[in-house]
Image (spheres, helix red, strand yellow):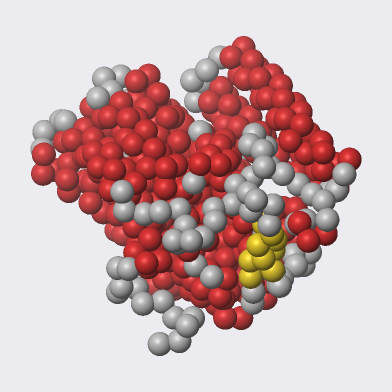
Length: 487
């Protein structure tokens, strides 16, 4: 077996850590999307209106955007072992809150808080990067992301059966409560089964916590610009809750808008405070990194994971309405899009390891733009099998692109990997909010064309990405410098 191969049937060393970590991610998505396959039973049990059901779907993603930023910081500061374990344990609580809800407000609170567990993905990116060398990193991160992401599909397949097993009107409560129990138990297993780094390796931490470090004044300005879409997405969610489903009043919405604006200003001030010394006294070239690398990856994840979240939400209805299918058959056909994660995301990482990070991203981004353009052409005249094949082909490029993005993320600056992964991951949720908002205003065909257009913008931005090469420098607590291979 070559040094570049991974023996996935092993349960030792770095492979053990990889398996334990993707299972942790799997459980976070299993819990995060535990409501989706049970919505009909939940709606009936709590006597929810259609608008209230839509509100729960919105609330499910609202907290994940800021949570990924915060969890990224905590991961870099305290290590992925402790952070993942606490995230799983704390994330189990909203599962129990939602399972015990007796009315819409209680369910809404539980659903909103459950968005926190959706930040788990970020933690594993740092953990895997600590255990695998650059030549295997894309493959390992792809396996982590692809297999872990399958937790949402596993929830869709298993939770209705579990609810039926318990039976009665409260079957859905037991099924959702069970996801919380699993998360709580696994938090203990994970904590006592892994370490942050291989024995003898150093876990590099950021110098300060509270905002991402940059290494030039230009990067500082770009960082402030890249923060704006995340706040805009939260404002957009607020608008949907006030104008779309009227859950909150216009006065409350205006107060939230004001609060978001003030929060951005405070964030900008904190970012300046963290980077003030760098702005006046830039570090030596060996210690610098280019934030434009992060910005480009943010845009690509906006188009890849953002579109995946949006398309998974609407594809069953699209197939049902376009081909006049019953909901069950439409759901099964649409699930093929999500199933591709098992192989596509690891494939994106593997290709990136073998053929280069930038060239792989260029090909995959062009492929997903073409894929969504093709899906915009689907109508009732198409043979159903061809429409499903087009969706699966598009799905490959989308999810392989996600794997290729996170094959680059850990190679930018080791001590900031959690924060970079958090920001890039948050952009995926920003993309989902944007695309789903577009979907509420336009036809399915226009929706797919909008995704295609943003993918083309991502392709243009990708031309600015620099292929990771050589080594990056990190400083030990004693002041000595360690050089880490990135190619």
